[in-house]
Image (cartoon, rainbow, N blue to C red; front, side, top):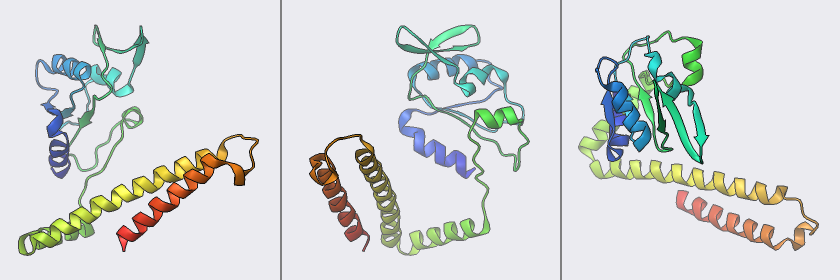
Length: 194
C-alpha cells in the first residue's frame, strides 16, 4: 500500500479522485476528470481492466478546432493536459496482457530487503533525531534538483554546439555565454555538494 499512500500524498493538492470499476458512475467521474485535469486513482484493480477506459489508456486524442478531444464511450470530451490516471493492484505479480503493458507504465513497488532496511533506519532516525532526518530529506531533494539542473545545462550546451553557424566557435558569443553560465552553475552545484 506504499504506492497508494505515495500517490495520494503526491496528488492530494490536485484533488485526487479515488475510483473503482465496481462503482456504477465511474465512467461519468472519469469523463469529468479527463475534461477538468483532475487525477484519478483506480485502487485495488484485478488482472481484468474494464475495456471502457481503453481510449484513455491508449491516449486516442484528436484535435478539433485546436482543442484536444477524446472519445470515452459515446461521448467526445475535451482532454485536459494535466489529467493523470493511476491504476494500483495488491496482486504481487499480475499477469496483464502485452497490450496492457504497451498502453501503461508498470512500476513494481514491491519491498526489497535493502529498501525495507533503509525505510526502518529512516523511521528510527526520524524518531530519535528528527532534525538529522529532515536534513537528509532536504539533501536528497537538493541533489535531485541539482541533477536536473545539470541535465538541463547539458541539453542547452549540446543544442548550442549543434547549431549550424558560419561563425567560428571562438567568436560565437551565444556559445561562450552558454559555456560561462554552465561553468558557473556547475561550480555552484559542486560547491553545494561539498
